[in-house]
Length: 556
Picture 1 (tube, helix red, strand yellow):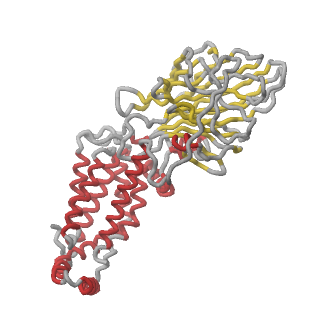
Picture 2: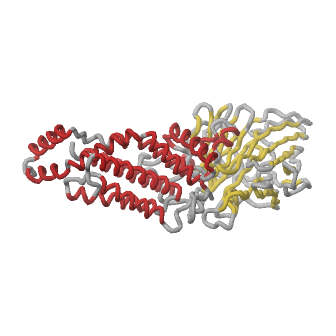
Picture 3: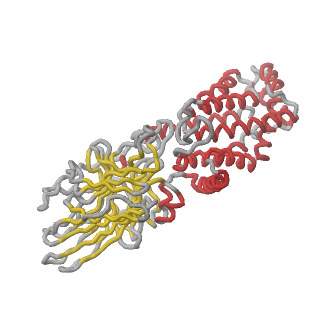
């Protein structure tokens, strides 16, 4: 029993390292350690002949759709048309006349992690980093060709910049009639918002009825965004939400292998997620929809939502509204846009604890006005909530330290008699009323709360560009002078010094090596995360010091 507490701490430490390594593997495109023995190989996409409009061939989506289901046009070797740039107070958007697609989006309120002189670029299309939003029409009717995201369109004249005092900006793209069938897309960008309303109008001036499907698609390369750390993992890839399956992340590797997800629903949305930011196609009104994913190039993936528009008679038209969100993962605003959309801000399995902690953190920020001091205050509140539980743990540690010389003398004396040594050790514990588990179980109880806070700080876009004091100008990036990591390493060593020395010399050395090895990672962690651990360490040291003093135990 004497080494059980340290053994359990070692288990926690090793488990943490394994999980961090697994996260690093997944973040860099390698299979998870817990993902079994791989997936069946993905079927190679097949190309069909080009349609009468001159658009590239349609490509199979690798999805279990009905045999008659229409396929989406391929993005392989996508040509480009004329581009048009428009600006609001929060975004600079570039649209392509080919399909009226959104092919570039700068977020004017956020700076790039690698180059602080540039804005964050969410959407772009440059052949290396591809990430675009597209819409178009498909149909399973033989001989019927409809406008897609590869069909040339013309932009109606109008302003390109949001003028002072004006709250919205509108762009209207019109395709040329194809056998009398035409698609009109109208984008509406609003001041201060990261949502774009997209109105689709399908006009049938042909001789026969048509049954078109509208697809809303996000296409992205399979690489994580530049600047992502190799020391902690955040998800990059598609996601979707339905009422039946709720929120589901889909890895690029799963798409290539033919992933399993809901194919049809009467509600839901699709998204593309990365650290701090996301994009999503939302349809406000309930109705049938189909979800498709595909690998459409060597390192290009798509997720699409397909909406049946029903039959449109000759001379008639039909409209469908959608919302494209592309911006920061601000939890409250996401929750207001669509059910479950706030889940793109991923807290993992500890979400029930993380969400109230984030709420408390935002309330503290509303009062203090500084995210750094809000983090410090939140850690203080957590330590206060667990004060008596911590006190019990530290008293147990102090008692263990007080009897440690006696235990070490006994172990040396009875080192050749392990059974008698164990009995004698239990007798000492009974006499001194020491519980070997007393210092460990309270720590285990608190771990979910502090791990939840870790994920809150790691995933909150509010930390980007948020200053604290002095040299800390951005809580989301590492300390430029490594002052906080060095302080955290020092406090970790002080904690070891305040605890009981293990009787085993090898174990005693490892107790000093463990915080040093663990602290190495914190040199590359965001400053906000290091500050959170440092504050926790300082409070723990203070409480342990006071308890040791009260019990007459040396703090050396």
